[in-house]
Amino acid sequence: MLAHIARRIGHFHGHQISSAILRRMRASLKTINPISLQDFSQPNPSWSPEMRKFYDHYNAQCDTDTETYENKTGPWRKLPSYNRSIKHATGGIYISKLIQAKARLFTRSVNEQGATFEYVAFFNKEEKICICLFQPGHLLEGAPGHVHGGAIATMIDTVTGTLAGYLSGPSVTANLNINYRSPVPLGSVVIIHCALDRIEGRKTFITCKVTSTDESKVYTEATVLFVSIKLGSLFG
Image 1: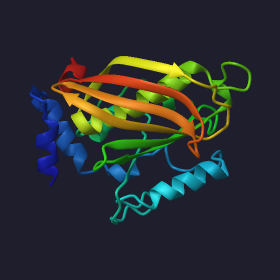
Image 2 (image 1 turned 90 degrees about the vertical axis):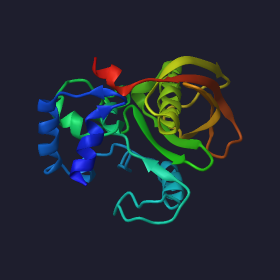
Image 3 (image 1 turned 180 degrees about the horizontal axis):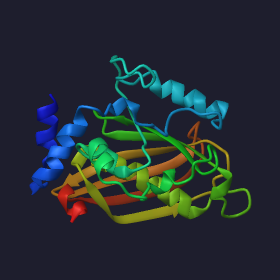
Image 4 (image 1 turned 45 degrees about the horizontal axis):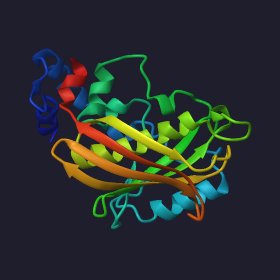
């Protein structure tokens, strides 16, 4: 099993990694436990009862129990959120141990719980959709008492990008078109709904809307185009 993972890490969509680095990766495979990585999308004390309610609702339908890591039957999969996006790549949890950097995923750049981006995403592979529960913290204020539009755009880009990655592999945003319908109150819980529109070659088109938890109010709508890339290009 370890050798199989090492071989997969050694070829990033046609890009070879040096034998020296590959040897270090193989050695690290014997000591690193993926489950030990901190998942920042787990419930914490800053989550409101409403946030926790919807988390429990979707988590109960997941194919893996995110607290015990036991396999179970369910249409959804909870997507972990690490402090570096590289960990989502094939073998990324190991590569991130070897490529040390101060770089950090923007939505996870503040350690204070509840201050900025509190969110968790669930992916339904059969329906090709992604649901994200988002509770914006006080440091994301734009207009008084409401979330900055750039923070909403960040979440839309993050969640749709995650869906594109799971459907089409490593991808980058080519076009993000947003219509703001209504301001989002700070501290509220909203749902970001993402769905695959179509795939044309290297292009993946995704639609998105941000609503209240009962879906009676639409805050934002968006369409996003992603273009798949070779993962090796990210490493020069």
